[in-house]
Image 1 (cartoon, rainbow, N blue to C red):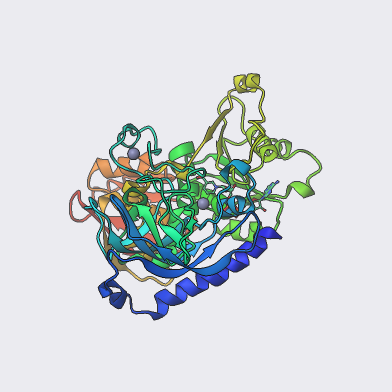
Image 2 (cartoon, protein in one colour; image 1 turned 90 degrees about the vertical axis):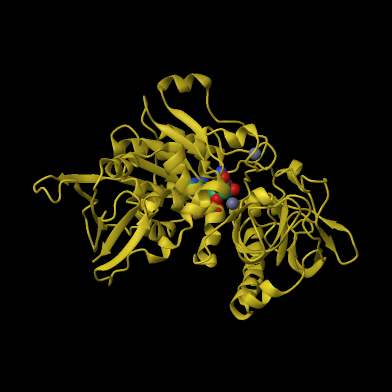
Length: 465
Ligand SMILES: NC(=O)c1ccc[n+]([C@@H]2O[C@H](COP(=O)([O-])OP(=O)(O)OC[C@H]3O[C@@H](n4cnc5c(N)ncnc54)[C@H](O)[C@@H]3O)[C@@H](O)[C@H]2O)c1
Ligand SMILES: [Zn+2]
Ligand SMILES: [Zn+2]
């Protein structure tokens, strides 16, 4: 009941943000001079655990050193907001607080020392930031950052330990997850703002700010789902659906969705879920059902419900010897990992991921390229689009379910680029000299996309048919 109250409130607030972006002239906003001034605006403030959010006027200070102030145009809601709002984990409570971490907007002003962002830039806030200088940011092994990593305990700015938000009578309002996006304006560290292409739809890009990147990244970066493999996803919310999409793109042959809400299967099917289990409908533990369906267990399972009992089912549903479980859900204290150490001797692995292992600031701009908006539509007729080689993966990500992708590579490196990403290449046609490196991906087609490399190594030319 709490959650639905919060969702209603945020929907109303988000509608008001959306109407700002729809009706106001963004150009006028860009020329508006607020640089260095305190801004008065509206925010949805959480005043206590489980208490209805209050939409009220607040003050937002200018950004300090290595910070930016952004105008939020779109903000969505993630389950993590709900947990923090409820105060499930007492140690993380800090009220009054501005929640929200999945959003998109425009830079209003930048603080001293910020050189990579400027007023008017389109940005996505990143709750798991990237300073770019620390030992973690310099390592390819992690997407955590020494100072800007996700930390639900943190409620003030790193710079001076103070808040940039205050009530109209000057009392501080706490920050949340490096972002606090349920406000018309927010101040974030520059390392928590990913600059994206201004042609990308900000409304859609908002989802890259948390659930889509986390779910898709869990399948790609963390589990490294292989073509032809089997997958089980526990919890088909925003995150679980994004895992399904990421697994589908990688060519998983079976994607089992598990959810206590059977309606989730309808959406799940569109995102690649092939089978569905409602734990309430099966007499046996879910892992037994999954082992029976897959001949011993799935190759990968993902826990996206934030429930330790579900995590155990998820762990046991993988195949012994090689199964991997990826933990995405946020789990309240005090329960510990529900495993006996000796169970790991059966060869099942368990790993956790924050933000799908993406390094947000540096990797998200690629995902947000406007190539997404040109994703193939059913009625496309032989249209030619040119894309940079590093966007091939993004193009593949956008392919609708059951699409046929033909590609021809002038160089072997393209082919390896595609196969390295484990897309299901069903056959390589070597019949004629002209189409020597010609391949077909996922041939259960409803429409076709031919990808030809006509201009050397740097670009792909795609014909949508
Ligand atoms: N790791 C990260 O970086 C990261 C990022 C964002 C969110 N999260 C966490 O991931 C989890 C999912 O987030 P979301 O926004 O998709 O949540 P959501 O509320 O949209 O979806 C959760 C889904 O789990 C289902 N569910 C609940 N109990 C279940 C059970 N016992 N068995 C099977 N299904 C069950 C619900 O019906 C719902 O469909 C949350 O715990 C959230 O805090 C983690
Ligand atoms: Zn989130
Ligand atoms: Zn860092």
